[in-house]
Length: 341
Length: 180
Image (tube, rainbow over all chains, first blue to last red; front, top):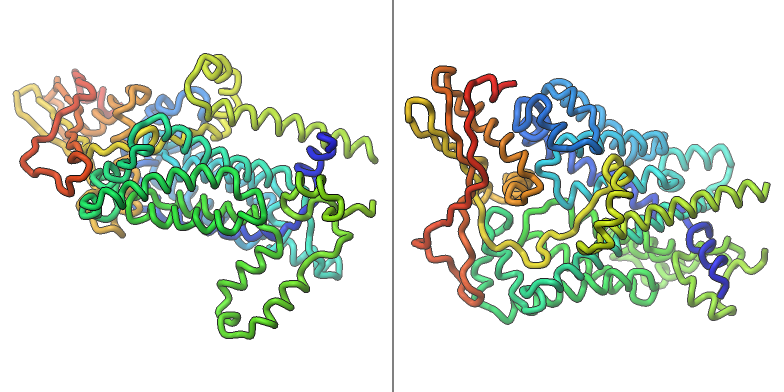
């Protein structure tokens, strides 16, 4: 295995743009949800009518975290920024002038982020980091108005391919989050000891629903705590491999769905689960979309399989269009694609 | 134009290596290596909003319920109590967008946020709306902390008193200090 070739194939081998395009839509909707949530306490957290006045936001942010909203912080101006950012997020979801919109989205989110250091937490951090990667990636190459316009100009509806280096960074970031949080949890005693969730359900300010009754079942608490830790470790590695991907993604979705009634941290689990989309190969994405298509629930299975196989790209596709079977492909030349050039 | 493609790939590869190193350094547990490298990456990670920590519920989740309050004693000796917004008793749909309030309380418990404790104190005085002749005032910012029951016990004894954790005490000589 030539490491340079593997490096090139991993970061620069063209892949389908559709998984990233689908993620762009979901991520944009989550950004809109985030913007809707912050309207509830907009003045309190983001304007000088709230917690921080004058230069306090600047002092709280420190010298490295700049935001124009640390200077312009009257409620009217902040509402204008919020409105403009919402419009940008809508355009981003639709994929209209996506490159420009992704830059504006990142800058807008960054302005809000650095204005409110006091209460930023996981969902904000993840949204900020993801928007940075989206700005760097060609996320409007598929499932967007830009892609439609390009296809009309080109005269074909061929599936667009992209160079995935920014998408790879997003994938690695997700795995790093799971790995870091699982490793940190092993430093304590409650996760490995199986009592962590007991503590979570009695934190009434952070908790979502009252699940104190669950504390009467310590075996269930233990299974849930240790399973969560195991799944987080597994998510850091098993999303990369096609045979394990859908099962570990399902486990991840269940993990985050299980956290929803326990902890009030909206949009964190949703974002994490949405990033699984960028691990999918195009046929896996089609299968997933088909699963959520009500017309297919009542259709004949034979037709579904035929439609799925018809979507598989031919062997002449560019190197690396499959998401990630790099090491395996190199070891098994018969399984390699894109040998023609 | 093969040289252009090669140059582009080299540039991107350099950026990718730099960015990944910065991200990994930011995420490794505190160690001499991290302390040595963090200053080098701070000018990159902080301005771009890429700083991150995934310590939520790690190494152990915070089981204590912390409620932020403040006590103000004005020049006339009058005592005023201000309670910051609480979400525990709200229905879930009202609680959902207000998740920042408990996060703010948790952040104030960390020494890194010490300067924001004083800002929170100034906010309290603005909310109480004391007249200029009520100054100077003495302000105490504290958390009322209720620990969880031991594992296996499904309820908190309601008679267990909350523990007071004082975050800071401040003296403000005049209204100008509160409304800059």
